[in-house]
Image 1 (cartoon, rainbow, N blue to C red):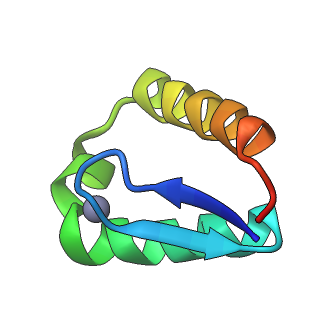
Image 2 (spheres, rainbow, N blue to C red):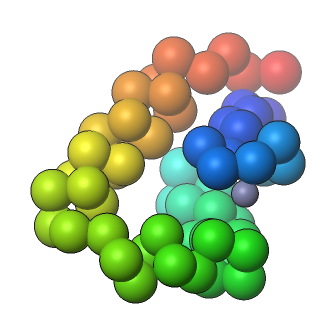
Length: 62
Ligand SMILES: [Zn+2]
């Protein structure tokens, strides 16, 4: 399992797969940080994905 912390709050998500944790994060953003998704420019979304991708690759399997 790898763990990724939400970039907006302290909730931590854990999963075996990148797609699953992305789904968890997306649902969480829709529920708790909706304005960030709706207000984000394409560049901000790109930067978010890049950051997530790096964090996912560097996260240690536990
Ligand atoms: Zn959050």
